[in-house]
Length: 275
Length: 318
Image (cartoon, rainbow over all chains, first blue to last red; front, side, top):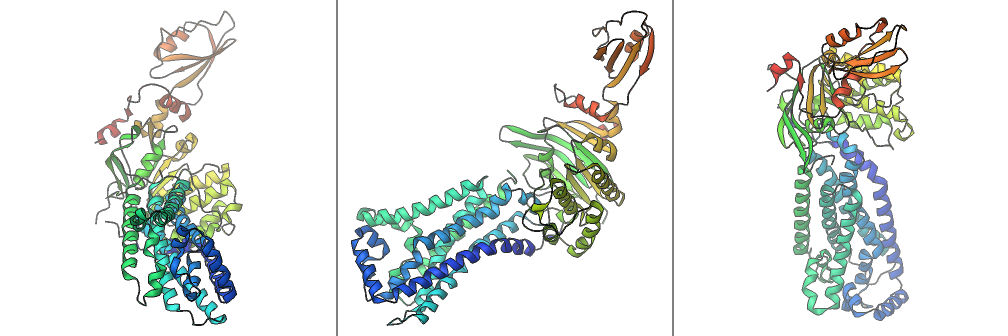
């Protein structure tokens, strides 16, 4: 019997270096966005203008972004809105969709997977490397988001001070939502034979996820469908009203991510490479 | 522990892609120290067979044994002792050749030995490994692939079109590398369209057509089974005779020019010679039969079931 191949740290390192620039760009832009948001939100005048603008929005949109929690006295909640700012969502989605598909089907399509698998590396190990970098990269963005808010609250005057621990809870919870989306990327990257199709599926999933939230806000009769959206499990209002970790929601997101990841692993191991 | 009898063994390997046949009932083996040619036209099933052997695709039925161990798809069976060069060798373009090769060497045991061997190999092939891959020509990228296959001194080499895109001098160096590896005891499966390469380097060969094995045996036997060409120059005493194709079924007229006939035959030349002897002949030439000509016969249209094995091979078939 041939010995069980050692874990391919060389491949993990190689891929990590190749992804490092992209991650730094995403982290840098996220940091700047949150920091700038802290700067803007530290001025009462800006908050008043923002709340006036929010009041002009349709009820459904206000429902999605927090509705009653949006008040001049709830600055922390208003600052936290930027964690789900469209730019932030796009940055995170680009990682969640781009990395797993790039490392799996992308490497297959470019012919590199044949080279990797010709060495003493199993398909499961390759998948695990892609999994670690995808989910690890997203979870590593949580301290970046929270760090930007912490620095911003330190440099700009807030009265009362921002509850940084809640922001940490929110950041981790938000990254778990992204991890669950990235797990869809792992499944798509394992299944599809073309990368653009895999990316398309992840983006479509993320868009549908948002639309579910929107429809459930517009029509009260459809309120129940909100639970099918991943964002339903990252509720800002609950995180800011409760000092504890939102363990129930986190567990649901973690289970979804685990199931999808496992499904991706099974598909990856059963498919022919290269196709 | 006794070493396994064969370094590589295909046992009734069959692979269907849905309704499309990849390869069917393929059985042959490669011994240690042997250079084995693997021939066939495009779509014959060579790459499918190789990918099954490398555990990249799951066979529909049958087995492949690598260095005595049954190949399990996706489990890197004995890949620590296998050197592989894919037919369509593509590598990351941004890093240097050295970085890529170091990473690939590290995905196996004894990376430091591979690193030291790589420098000598790069020098032999004339590759500058510190250049980014995107700056390298097609031939130099192919050298990176050859280095990757040879750098860890494997016991089994699976090379798919190894000299594709290389200049004649480097081709010679690669052939020499292959011979040296075989002399050191490594088994080599050499898939190629380059018949000169197979004729020069290989001891035995298998020919695939439409997913089925149509020849298995020594390369010399393959050459013998090809058409033999004969050029006949008739004396100018009379008109050039009409070639009676129906009377001599194992021969055909290739070309006729003035007093000159170019004929080809397979099997016994008896009938053809008797016909030629009826006329005054000035000169006869028999150019050396090349593997190319033999190959054309196997590649030609017709049923793929006309298996031709040497007597020894027939005995070893399962």
